[in-house]
Image (cartoon, rainbow, N blue to C red; front, side):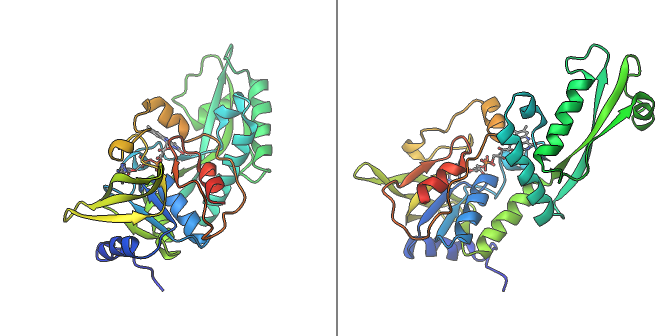
Length: 290
Ligand SMILES: Cc1cc2nc3c(=O)[nH]c(=O)nc-3n(C[C@H](O)[C@H](O)[C@H](O)COP(=O)(O)OP(=O)(O)OC[C@H]3O[C@@H](n4cnc5c(N)ncnc54)[C@H](O)[C@@H]3O)c2cc1C
């Protein structure tokens, strides 16, 4: 059965999250919030999510749209991150083939380049290995004549050849919507145009949030463990501790490691009631829930 996920049901979702028990309240409806809500709802956690504007209306619809293993992190020696990102790329290509498509890249090498051909070749083998040789295709080394035929506008002088390798590209905004819809289908109560205006605190702990329906100015109280994924695009009243981060850090954060915790158990009370996700460490959230 199709789960409620429409303009006509958002008011009901808002009312339900303020009257029915909710375990987890996710603030922010970008890809991080949508992913957390989906993950939590699929684990049987009673989940609500509020987004002050359109779902995916901020950073998550303004990315470079790459779903990549992180070739540049390989050079930085971040093997674990590349392994994990390659795995996620494979998962997304499998579960959302209508939104995530393979994308071939040419990495040309010129005489005297900072990354010489031999180093690139080793890196490419490692990149393939870290995806358990399960990437779209294995990389290939192309000689300069072949490269010139494929990309005639590349500078020919000094060209030694190029590595042809694969990553993927996604429709980022649609990926958010698909993830949000999937969260709703798993039972999450989701509402857009619903802004968290303040965090509710007692005994020094965050116990929930006040949420304003910006379409009719009505305010709801939602009591739950709060996860903030509001990124650089907002603060939550005076409690907005981590609202401002340099843009460069925000971009880098997309590719930061998300450590895996054990599976979260549903409905288990936990003394920690408020989790900030300013740096996209979704694993922290799982740790707090489990
Ligand atoms: C130029 C650029 C290129 C990028 N390229 C890539 C790429 O190729 N591959 C990749 O994986 N990543 C890329 N990224 C990073 C990626 O886009 C971000 O990491 C990701 O979109 C962050 O998602 P988010 O959900 O955390 O934040 P956002 O998408 O910003 O979502 C936060 C949401 O919180 C909402 N909000 C704020 N305050 C409140 C409140 N009080 N109440 C309710 N809701 C609130 C906002 O309206 C917003 O929708 C790129 C980023 C940029 C800027």
